[in-house]
Image 1: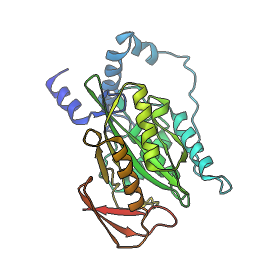
Image 2 (image 1 turned 180 degrees about the vertical axis):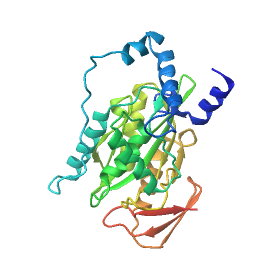
Image 3 (image 1 turned 135 degrees about the vertical axis):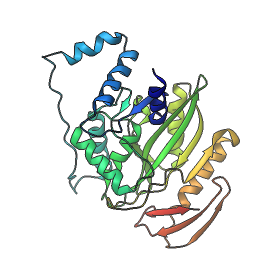
Image 4 (image 1 turned 90 degrees about the vertical axis):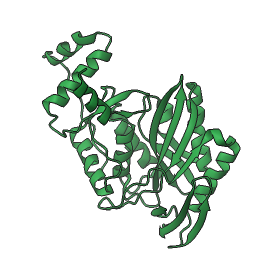
Length: 300
């Protein structure tokens, strides 16, 4: 790899839940030749068959046509919220997890929600495999407008064999119950059913799943509920509440998680909630919710 290529790699790579560094397609669609060739070159380096694999696929004349999943854009009002979430998750799972080493859609976390929703539309149109961060954006888009449903990012940082792993899912809250949707290499690190009676219960289940793979959970970040307005110019608050697990017992962490969950469900507009010493931030409710989380919380 040349010095220029190394610089591009370091600039564009992100760390996913598999602990693998990967490229990001910044050229959009159709993908430019540089990004396309780089993707195949990277895959060839990692594939057991090496560089023999790429031409075998590229030159094949009889590859089966891949089915295109139909996005659930008009969910029936008669469905329960749990059923709607299951349909959304199945669609994302049908897109499959992206193992190519190149993330197909560029997700700039600080873009306005409206811009990120445009990226979600690209995902539906192109119908390509996705990674965990893309799944969060797509999940937000597909669950917009579900009455009473709150969506918020839940991020994890774990360590295994001295390697750091980052992962994010879309947490959901409805009628007193928590769950999640998302994508991962591991089936128990993505969607969780809407059955957990507390935020700490949901996070603890993820921690237990990580323990199954000998991963130590080092940090958990809970984002602020995302507005349902796809045209919003607000940004997603990815880390409204951060916990470093090595500084407190898990019992203390669970207590603070549930305290945080109660605070952001306060529904009185403009009420100062207080200073959270764990997060190091003041919390204000700026918009009232309707039977659930407030639509937006400012930490400042």
